[in-house]
Length: 415
Image 1: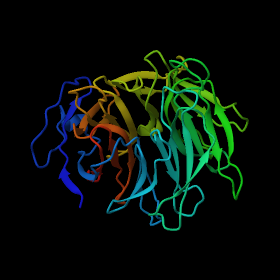
Image 2: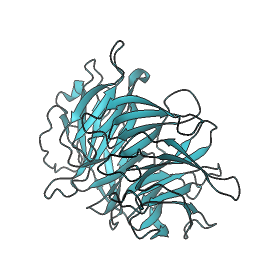
Image 3: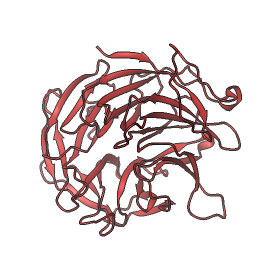
Image 4: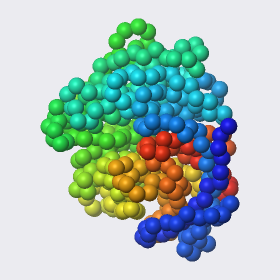
């Protein structure tokens, strides 16, 4: 049986990030300065927490995909020594792979790549960021007829320090696996050979996977996100790196993919990175800076006649080891909000949590914020998905030192 409780939320202006006190009411409205005007275009956020698992090891990665083909998104967890999925809606746990390498599993990608309605899973493992020569592993998990049983791991070639992976649609509409290491081969202190961002194409039948290098000019690439940057069929990649933030467009020639700069690395580079939409179709890029950093930052396209780099706005500088990020319209307001999580690893006494940032409907481009989780989620990773088909995005998070997986079920009133 899942433990359930109502989530208490509070709000502040982003320019005043003072410490927050817990609230003690059974239900709480969004409390903002001048709430009637500041959030006039957004409904009152309301979430209900659900404990899915309270006994995980680290929770390196959490994502959603329909694993059993029933039309509902399930949860997929990459834990230290296990790969597991949780069946929607009861959230029963099924371990599909275990101890793939002696070192930790570190990332997971899940998507229906062949159109049969059931997701495929890939895993990154062998995690040792200090070993830039021999660490890392990439596996494709071959599903059995009964997907609640163990899946067959198929090991694929890899670069050292495999760190993040996603299934990404290419220019032919195929779902291919993109894998991004943390470091380049043989790097020391983020210097040396560039990170080889690689693309894996699953063969139609038997045979080897086709592997190509998409880019190798960046160093210390912490995270990336597939986005729809232009009007073609392919998804582009939004990449956070030591050098800054870049959008990568596809080229059919190996290692010829174009990087469009969004931000440089003067603030220490970017760790987490996501793209969001504002009213009228304008876009923004959200980051956590630097890697494992304290700042939530957004970038807007530069004004005409300015530099090529986007305009930078710091929303919050109080994060303690920021490590998770999501963008989406959770409130049904016609513009995306930002969800950010921090884990406070190796910071004794520091609080952990998740916060929602909401763009205001005014010419100044201001944002307000709402505390989603106050010190019960040391957020290693999070994702957004509509888990119950009500048209509202829910928040799913995995906690490192809190050893938990939680759903923050979106019960915001229709707008």
